[in-house]
Image (tube, rainbow, N blue to C red):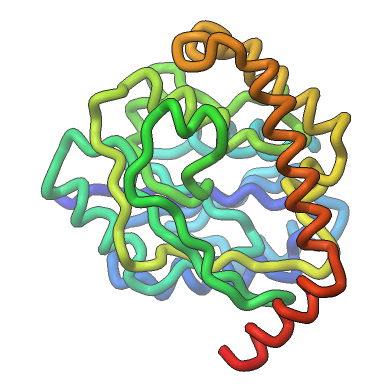
Length: 273
């Protein structure tokens, strides 16, 4: 029997990109999927666009604005698939995405997560590379997976959900901490095929906004720390001092990246790539 994939798309004021996103799902080589669009209280014409796209495989659900974690949880609750693949409404899947990811689960039923690198498009065209192997200790310091990674729905049914208190960002990082720490010995597998394309917007994104706002970032980091305090202390007994050190180096890097010399260098690299 073919495994079914539920693709969960939270959408908040991304009507402009929604059809392109859905068309990339329709174009999948693997056809046993369902798509659930969760309109998180959009004020644009998301509903109008979605209504033109829905069919027996594509559903549309509206909720009052509660944030991306709530939208993902709502969508996954409604899902009937064996596997979950979150996808942001402004991003797109590559044609072999589902096929390539499911090949890994078929080879090893114990696999917990399948992930990949991604390619950015839009304002910036670039490849974002993720480490093939990482430990839970490394994951506690920095997210190692994109939100568009596939996992079995059974873990959500067991109680591992997106934290709806994390409304400002990094909710996917906290979700992976929950999942991987609760099943430490199960495989987390990277595939070479880039599963999705990440749309780069001019200006900022939710997570970029977090890292530019020290106060907001500190609140989120401490929320995650308090939730997983025992786990952090297992690997980092002095995590708070470590966090200050991380912030110090992040500021140094930000200063370098914002320098005129670095911007000129980056422009020339992209020009001759």
